[in-house]
Length: 108
Image (cartoon, rainbow, N blue to C red):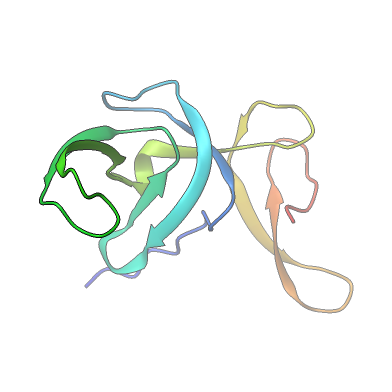
C-alpha cells in the first residue's frame, strides 16, 4: 500500500476544492488514515435512513457528513484566510512542525 503522509489533522479549518461540495469551508471532525479520507463539518452531506433507537426515537431520514478524499481538501491559512499548502520542518527544539507554505508561519 502507498504511504502518503496525511498533512491534514483533526480540528483544522479546510476548504473543499473539488466535488459536489466545492467551495465549502469547515472544521475537520475526523481523519480516516487508512482510507486517506476526512469528514468535514457541513460538507458532503448525505441522507441516511435510520431505524428508531434511543438517540432518535422516531427514526427516519437524517442528514450527515460523508468522508471526502484528502486530495480534495486544502488547509486555510489562519492569518490570511486563503488556502495554502502544508510543509513540514524542524523548529528550534528539533521537533517536526507543520507550516504554511504561503506565509511560512507554523500551524498550531
